[in-house]
Image 1 (tube, rainbow, N blue to C red):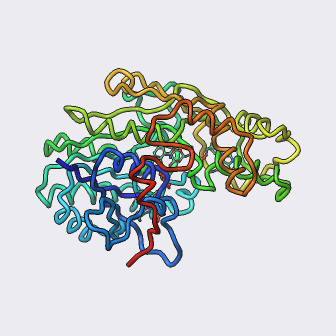
Image 2: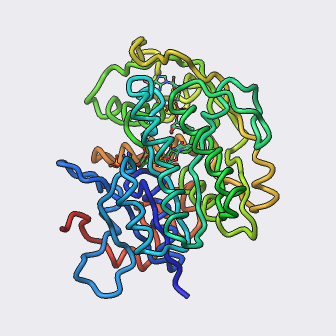
Length: 364
Ligand code: NAP
Ligand code: F7E
């Protein structure tokens, strides 16, 4: 029977890839989007289906994580089999500027969804998008048993969401699972996260459209993976016999400086000639070293990422070069064609079904 999934954060990086994955698996998908005076559906425009098409499998609903009543009505009426709760104020630096808002959306937003499920009396599986930021200053490598020590309002809000998910699992017997995902990136990554900020700048410098790139701390180490592989892991987490919590990451960490070397070096540029320090990009408290021990996910989910650090950088630089209308060097495209499963290909989409369903996501 057709499975029905609800995705919060469907317009984000992960939401868009997860939607493609679930469509290719035959799901009916309902996504919550925010009302905005400017377009905010770019990442899903290519898979949107016109509301006048019969039997369409991707449906969008207006909603906001700040409001419980409407979420409860939506969930009650929709009766999803699986909820992927990805919506959040997800920028760590910004969370220092708007800590209360981040607590409301990223923390309490999880409770609102959990309560909506409980109040509507339905039995569905729930995924909480937890983060390696919850580990904060805990020494690497970090696994499911590592104690959390968050270093930002964002990290603290995610810790709250994590424990609320565990609480609803224990208290009400809900199938509620936490993913604890380390940084995952792609050509759809928001432009203000450091990887995408760098790869966009590399493309623009290569094209002669920009000369300088301003960054903050170059010494932090992150475990960066390729986002489409992580949404596949998220899906697997909800297909298990029993709910549990899982770390997803590559087990390889690099500094921002190493990312710069790799990204500029790929196009024969020297990052030292272009990068300048700007203290506005520093955080009041930094997370220095994140490195995943994802052995539980390897063992229990059979989840193993294929794209390594150097490959990720090439994929992202190639995509940004292409986006500004130049011919990419090509290693990135070749890597994806070689290593990533049939549902995700270079052009952003996916299965034959999806290619046929292209349209615009801005009806109603
Ligand atoms: P993202 O690109 O920033 O997407 C966040 C999504 O949440 C967007 O669809 C956004 O809508 C939506 N959203 C924000 N505020 C909302 C509100 N008040 N009501 C309803 N929706 C709202 O994030 P991502 O990288 O895809 O990450 C997905 C989830 O995983 C997030 O919860 C993030 O914190 C978590 N996570 C991410 C990573 C990573 O490396 N990417 C690692 C660990 C955990 P708009 O498009 O309208 O802004
Ligand atoms: O920063 C340093 C910065 O903003 C990475 C989110 O998806 O992953 C993400 O959070 C590092 C930090 O990602 C700039 O100080 C230097 O050490 O790309 P980021 P993040 O903070 O790791 C986790 C897992 C999440 O859950 C979050 O939702 O890069 N850095 N200079 C900079 N960072 C930014 N953004 N901009 C700079 O100019």
